[in-house]
Length: 206
Image (cartoon, rainbow, N blue to C red):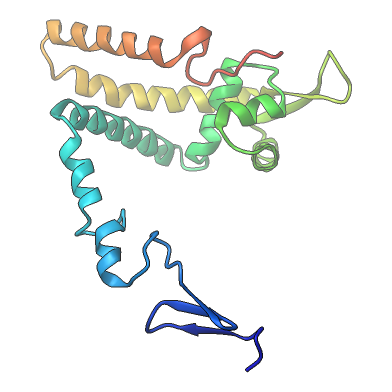
């Protein structure tokens, strides 16, 4: 074996480079095998890290997470009811409804994905006749995006389905509690959307 040969010793989790032996990185920042995995694997069932994270959550934290999961479930069910549009596509349509004329870069930033991913998404929405591409009035090299009439109707139907689910939950509460819940949600929405950015909002152009 020449000095350049590389030999992997799976039984000791080591890699030999010529005459020098170093611990093999097994992906969890440890130098040894299963025992270390149990200590540090964030997805393991026995790891103290996982237990610590759970123990550090307060009852209020659990309520907030449950509320987020419930809202996401309502959105997924509404998208399933529409049948022909994904939740990601509906998110893009919502951004464009709130910000007609958004360009590709602004849409990608609002959705938190790359421009190339957004471009492919827009291609599918245009092919489905939900979005129109138009030349920007500011520069011919830039494309502005707008919902078609079908796109606007699809987003409205999506919102109607979500609202129906939310109202059904809210109406189970007494009137005074309904008002308290709505008031609290109004505060949360205001904090989550600074500088005038609501759901589907984009950052102002520089």
